[in-house]
Length: 415
Image 1: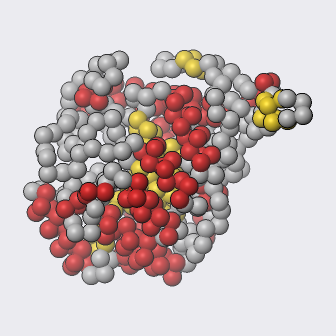
Image 2: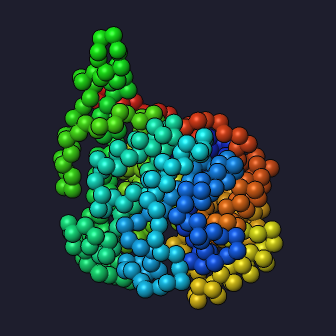
Image 3: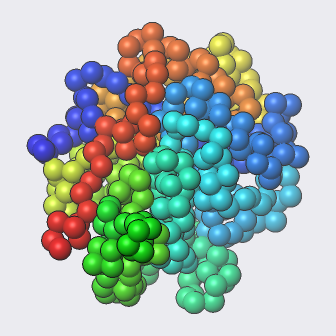
């Protein structure tokens, strides 16, 4: 396989085809989204609510959904909890949501968030492998680090300092973030090795001979690192995809640690450019990290993140955003670009950014009840008319949808 250039995507760059995902969180990404008439605040903790969202996303032929999660209550400040009671607080476990929704869907990928900072990779590997079985090969994993002191206090295994986003340039905070991202990379390595710790044909299941498993085809992973020491093997056989997809969100920061994590560990990276020039620079930086990690011959999808307010009339979209801002008591801002306009205008924006080397986009609906259908029933048909988005699902697995082959088992190759 030839190395990927910054302007190429892992499947078919020449076709101009785009990949689309949506990020699901509460009632939407605007903090006042739950107060909209189309929102269903009393149903946020029900299976039906999440099933309806993912079914709508699948109706729009999207590649996958991500499901947000954290180990502390939602909060407006970057690193500390707050006392607000007029915004959504509380959520369900993302992996369990995905497992509940999997049997109700048939093609769309399911990518829950797992916080690597305070959880064990053995548990995550088993959970995502199980999700891959339950979904027949549509599971992924979004890894996330947590520098928050209040979340560390839930576990009592480490102490993290209090800091504000303005403190990110302090040497001690930079060192903390570098360590957390290095820990996340080790976490992913352990998870991947555990997925491979059973060879594909390790299960014999021969009633006549009484042999259920070939013990020689289960392997110790013997991982020893700064953060983890894991013997293995897993207790769950190798997942249907072999390796469910690993993804992570990476911002431009005072360190290169987030981009290094993508280059070293991810199949999909979510990035947050605000214009074409920044997209080009980010893609170049991530590809450099991928090359530095010795992975230049491996596919790595880069998805641009955008928060979207979509209406048929751009003035209506702007007015809706202003009304939500008034309810929240402050203008909405985001790490990602905030797009306000029509589906056709958004299609223009996505195509412009894609020319800089992004192979897809993860859209964050400002109000899920309004903007998710606007994506599936407005943006998707517009992209189809332009010949840059699928008209039917062409694969049954998440790897297949993203043009990624099922990888060989590392232990079977060397056994």
